[in-house]
Length: 574
Image (cartoon, one colour):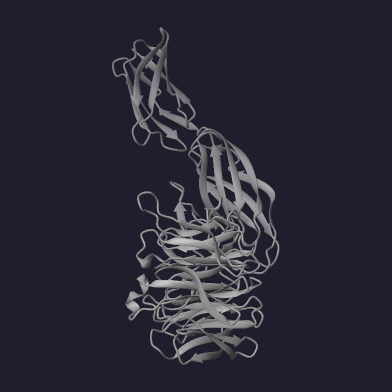
């Protein structure tokens, strides 16, 4: 089982990046956050076909999908993850749909659609439907139930079977005239919109996604799209689809691409898209919350890679998502296709997970926070040391205040540095209990450097307005120390040793020092010296005259280091 800080949940994943030469670290990516609560129920089924949520009666319906002719079941759970009852069928079942008022539950069987009163959970009707052997899909749109049917002798042929789209209205099920190849998927894309998609296993070279106007007596297609390019790449690998609460967008879980966000009118790409799923995760499910605030994106992933992201439905909202990892006998391996559904008020997300081979299933009840609190930076930013030096550690400090209760996990701020070479990401810094934080950096360019600190928020806290601070970065100081004899003679000569000390970043090449000699005959230049790796150097000279001789050693500096000079005077005798 994959865990991080809490059983069954990735509560925080931090990547640490060491600052070169400082021994100091900051986190390189924002942490994931845990939901307020998470109940998990192991489901007594070995196959799965559909999930439906009744917010009026606070019930969750889960249908299996057995290939046998008997023992179909619909499991009924409450919003706390406790089993209420099982709706047993003497035939295999697949597909679920709820009426718009949640008064009627529709269950697909091989040769009929069965209805239940959701108040009493008593069966109150059954309508004959074209015989299906491949797993019926149901969707409620435009006040009507739509269903698929395909007939083959063996289930192994279902992936490429001819599948019809039917409509149930006025107590009968009839053909709409629409059909295609494969286990066609259905979903409501809004009050009067029906979505139909073709899965990749159908064998179609370029599977389609279509949108229908379901408001009238005749189903009218108003948009369709195929996704492969001119070279046949990028074809749709459909796992799930969902319409946004306001009906303006369609989200598609595409195993080959990730989460596609489309405009519902023509199924074109929306101007703003969700961030990519974590590396190694393949999209498996998607659902919008009933209140329009959140979107849940399920995935198939292994190891510590998140299997579920819960985030703002608005793709321009930079709030980091809640991330969940599911693994093992307590969780399931990942979110099963079409395995996500919300309560109408967005207070609960229901996620069905499966093991790797799809023979065991789990129901997770997740409660995103219902309230978001304000945050703000206070007191501006400060830096230490007061004088920033190129190539040396610099700490930028500030304070983030937040309303509401203390977060379960420490908040994180992100920081950037902008200088003459552009903007540089500095990773994240942890906010302490008192709200203070420290961003560590090592500026490598002389001149003004502007630090910008952001808090992107989480599902409990709103983002804060960025705060900036400009620092003047100076050249690193250098110094020269000389050791020279007090006196010498012209025959013995003069030997002076010294050391160049350079702060900040080590120069790319060993510094070269100039040497000037001044005596009673005037001033002249001696041969320059190159310092050793440790900064040491030696000067040897045969003076040309007696009396005081002064040697001046100079380092000219470079783009990152100041110049420095030192002198030594030697009494030279004959």
